[in-house]
Length: 278
Image (cartoon, rainbow, N blue to C red; front, side):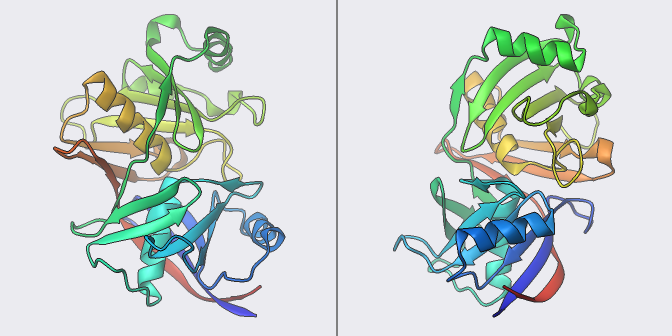
């Protein structure tokens, strides 16, 4: 049957310079096999399928697939799916707050500011195992003096995060040195120079749509924000750049509120709109 379809670009002010997302709007009735097969065919980092809610507290339900597996949560699919749902006639119970049902439960999306922003979900924060730290450090060719911190984060996906001394050092790392599934997703973060357009540079090294790293990763940045908050290093607002080495211009806004909640926001542009036969 024909189902409404949108392809959008997330986390960049310039369409096609962010992270692409495919959204099947009318996905009720599709089998797991059909959804996984279509996600494999689109060959994007993620493809989402919008469905009628099961949780009465949600506005709609989304399922998120990479070309190889289903994800319980992901950042740019959350914002892109929300905008696609609104564009195709979705009406939220609260006009300023979308409640999206997904694998980790209900994720809230704030529509009250200039850019949609999702509430960072709970994140498990744990020391990185020493053997894993040494394995990644050796493979990436990192000098121990470059490494400020290491930590393992989990908010659905699991991230092995290395904080380096600077954004410049983050950009020098050769992402082609690691292969999937030999390594889990590796996050890199480094502080930008004073006066730069962003506060931090972030990279997520894992294959994505034929590339050796993900263009812009909302879920990783959400996990990083939770970690910085625990460390006492999260200001009220941060701007993060991502995708620089693969010709993207990703910008993520991280805002913390007095109630302790953290909101991850960015631009969303609808690039393709039509129907698919599934």
